Amino acid sequence: MTQHSKVAYQVMWNRLISVVEEQAQALVRTAFSTSVREAGDLSAGVYDVDGQMLAQAVTGTPGHVNAMADAVAHFIRRIGRENIQDGDIYITNDPWEGTGHLHDITMVTPSFHKGEHVGFFACTAHIVDIGGRGFGADAHSIYEEGLYIPIMKFANKGKVDETLTRIIRGNVREPDQLIGDIYALATCNEIGHRRLIEMMAEFSLDDLNGIADFILENSRRATLERIAALPQQSAQGEMTMDGFDRPITLKVKVSVEGDRIVSDFTGSSGLDKKGINCPLVYAKAYACYALKVAIAPEIPNNAASLAPFEITAPENSIVNALHPAPVALRHIVGHFVPDAVFNAFDKIVPGLVPAEGAGCLCNFQVSLRPRTDAAAPATARRSEVLTFNSGGSGARPEHDGLNATAFPSGVMTMPIEATEHAGPVIIWRKELRPDSGGAGKTRGGLGQYMEVGAQEGHEFDIQAMFDRVDHPARGRRGGQAGAPTTIAQDDGSAMSGKGKQFVPHGRRVVMAFPGGAGYGDPSERSVDLVKRDLARGYISAETAARDYNLSASDIAEVQAAVAKGDMM
Image (cartoon, rainbow, N blue to C red):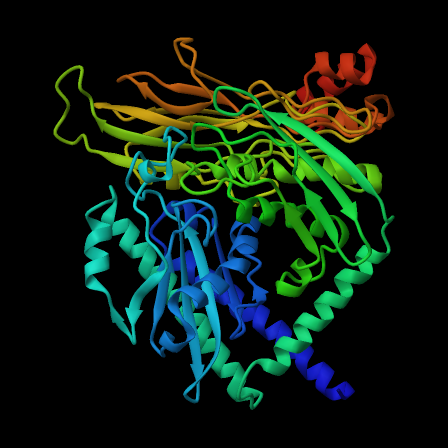
């Protein structure tokens, strides 16, 4: 390969990344669901004819992207190569051949150039409702969790299957929204296809074989070099999370073995009776992500850069749930996988990975309806409102954790205005939670407070999807734990961290989301940083004195400066 051809292929690689990013942004702009439009809970990518992912969009979540990396091969197998036609669009929400639960729609579109099949585009989006019990942990099997769409053709040679769309419409609570999202997914693949064909014409390519070989070969070599430079050791990691009605333990052995890193989850808890079980494809997505960001964050995600990370788990363990286990909230367990992996990896390469953070997203879905305890106004209506929110991320070895920021998912918090626009819900409070970040040489990120209610004339069910109530984030290397999750009604009535719960007319739900843990001994934290945190309201005077030994005179100095407006 000449130097010129290497440069040309590098330009094409960068171009492919921009193509799939435009693909993702097209989905963001056209999606109906706030989970896609506002939170970016999606993925987009381009694949070769064998279903190997060549490039992924920067916009998106590791759970979607890395799980979708395996999905296209399933589509090829189910559809059959002989049945792949120009103009086809394929669809599924199969948890085990898609991205882990029924609430994710994955769509795959073959790309043809000059009459020949040259590759695929794929995308995934979280949709607000898929029927069944609704988005929550209450189901006892996959059959209760919603409508299942096997891998099939949504469009055959350009003609949409209207029977399929009627079946979907008849089984979901928000039919216009869901069908709109499906067409948005199909459209974003079409945008990617157009840009790919433009690139192929520009570079006089008849197929993607050459650029695919270049991408995969270089990514594989670069990743293997990083792995080879690590200590060839094994270490165990373990953590406990709340679960539904009993604690769940994740155990993992991480082994660096020359040309691969193996993460073995033997010893983890078995299946739960409720819908928090995690298919292996989703656990694998986050285990790979954790190791990749630790050792090779700048190497683009594709089939070859992910291949050296091998993930195993016993069948019907909490991280390898098999059909027909309920898996609607598989993200709760999946989002804790990186912390478990980091707990092991920190023993192999100290000083690299962060302390534990909030872990799973602090999601809740509100099912609103006209009040039933008295006459409801004529304007009262039914509505489903899903909102994504975040606790604090764990402190890093050299930097504080991020406040109210989703790690590892990377999903954005939905703005209040967008949430309230989606239905008759009111967000009465949303603000950072002081003293929730664990103390340390570097401090854990802050969680947040939220208070939610309904407009006059409505009652609602809230689907809580929280963790860290009984098992807050643990500090690393001397850092302190983050604050736990709390949830209750505004009259003090206790509520559970998971499950559907009724909230009567006029009542509100008050929530405090968890903080990230600290890293390192708090006594080693810079006095100036402690003063800054106190001035910004991130910590109280009591915390500054108790956890950081800030003197009374220093506290008084900061308080006086804040009163004057001199410190921000």
